[in-house]
Length: 461
Image 1: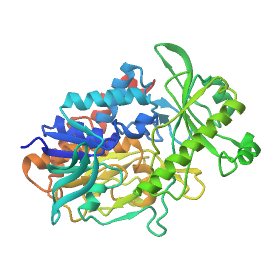
Image 2: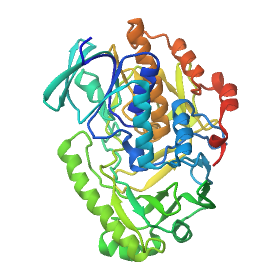
Image 3: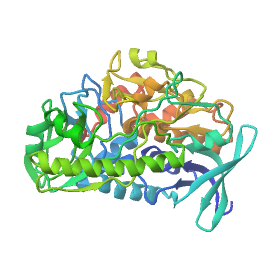
Image 4: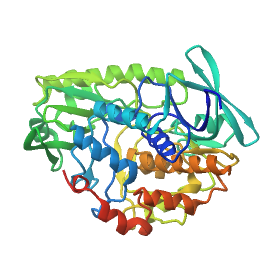
């Protein structure tokens, strides 16, 4: 092998990619991860919660690397466990973004993954459905990175599309995609006062070793009290605008409330316009919070470094996760993990969030087939670009499911590289055996073992 030849190449270093690369390397594959940004961790690094590990009836169904990250973050002071919450979910898992970034950077290094930053995928070399190399623009020019198998965790399915996979964007009939947003980090806050002023239900409360008194770590609210000011100043385009808060600190909080519509996250000009508009929007929101909302009067504000994209391409896979799968909590034979976060739809026209609960027992299976692009031999997609309806995507796009898919895809591509088999031909039962032995939940197959293995920190903060 040359210095740019690998067993597994993972494209995209968000939460999906870090799980995929770590799992592939731990399975014995020579693994590389390429990321366009100068850091890994994606939206978790901005400070968003790792939604969601626990069903509506309080059963934990997400384990494996996803749980390992939480356990290690607790030890670092960057998480407070899975905290009970009586709202649209039964528990929340907030994390500190910077400590998350530090941890996953270390986990990749521990596993022996080669990480290349500032890398933009510009094409592929393919022979029919077999990808032979990925063309990357990086420092010094365009280079081709080769691997036996590939995990496309780019979010936009860039490699799969360059290789000829079929796809659609957004909702099939309209093409509309959920809006993009930018998190606002607020420091020097009084989070108890903010929750008293804005929470529409009981906040999730937690403690930490350096702050034994319970404080709010998650709650949601609206700006209804300030509708006149909001509309007069043009802070948001609608009345009763919703807002979501999370933190693991008593005096620092993340605010998720911005939205820009009509953005195509695969178009660099469109996404750049969104970055400008969102930076301006969250800066204006910060000034409004400081002036009008108790608890923010001594705060200072830092917009996240990049927009968060909720939806772009959906790959046509061997199986498409359907609305019915979600509404019935369907279980499948080729499961590689479960999703328990409700369908979270941010309206493409207004940005308002609506949640729809998963049916059945509150969780549905992710079929391995939904990660296999139709017509491709040695590529898996993982994360928000899998084969899924736009409605079901409202659940699968969230970070806990992405960690599950990433770990499963990493193990699968490592096995395929070692056994010289295509992704459609992979022995899924062997994959499931490895995932189960690693603690990844697989429906009834893994239920007893994993519930017994759940750490005290996973049960409550």
